[in-house]
Image (cartoon, rainbow, N blue to C red):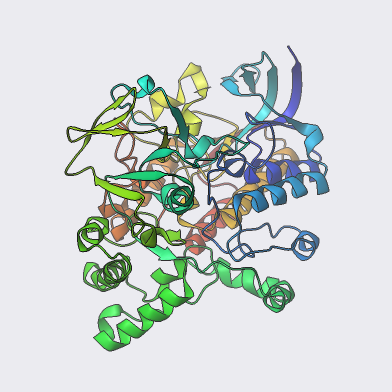
Length: 531
């Protein structure tokens, strides 16, 4: 058992935890990072499934706090794959000498606020106990895997995998019969690669998703040179965009354009590829009629690509495009033209049980050598609630959040003094480019701690009235957007029993940053401060 006292304990060594440690060190605070994994990288440490890559262009999915780092790192592809992103995280940890303050293979089990000592007590599975004035949760938004409790789930005699906890040594599916359950982002990325290896692949689809081609390719050296030369302008432009990504946004309404103009614009966006597709018109996630024009264009593309009309119809999404996270793919739809791929529509043939030999769906037995659960995450709150976090009076966070998460700015929650969350529920987080959102949160928290120290303040806690107002605002703006209109992991719909609450803040990155800045400028308005 190792006990230690520090100014701050940071839970998680992903991009948020690494930068938080770097900032606090620079301010002269002592800090300790506790990480469940065996290395840095967070989601990119765990998610090693075939085809795993980021859906934000690599030159933007990167830190901007150090211009030297921006200039020295060479991204190889437009959309970086998991191994390259992990190498980048490892490079950052080495470059800024962060490893010496990180405890790896150490999972936090309890974080309890000791009111009399005004300190957090953090216990781990390996018996460590840490005490700190500040506890900062950098646990990530998509880091708690979700596997539905299928009947007989543990009876399968073959190999099982979850895309979010993939074996580090990789998996070779050559000659195997493989079943993939789920058609979200990780499935859409991995299915084309698994299909190339497997003797036969069966995909179990509950809800079809929209996917836009990535058109991924190595970066042109001249494009990279120009990006590095113009990083300040690119970053400034990104900060003005609702999702924190610098890309071409057409503010015109889709309904103001003629059908031919819309077709040309959508074709251009399809050729460009990626998340920029939703920037084709300014009202695609605000107006259902406008959205329908984009949705039908993508459905038309699916019909063009998939040769079997019946399979194509099964793959057609019927919901609003963008209400679930838009997927970025490489040959996903084309994969269903392969003779060794079968698509099972779970709406017609629901999964009844996992059996020793495979999956029984709609009365049909599907035999497999391996099953891949591409069933996503208990998003936004799952990683936090897996830890027994207790605030004033020993009140558990999971009890306070029983009806859904309640935060002030996604940074703090009333009743839990000196506890901060990086990109917590109630912040833009997953609706934005995560790296700039992480940096904005970390900078705000670091500045807050420096302010507290400079002014002799030992305790900071979100006020209940400020939290109530913020939760009401988050709910109100969610109603303005079509993103809140379908059953997605944004509202916890993929986890049975989870409260249906639209968890991220949909008001846009610039408006959110302005609000955070105003709170700080007004003496941390909405927080109770005490010496």
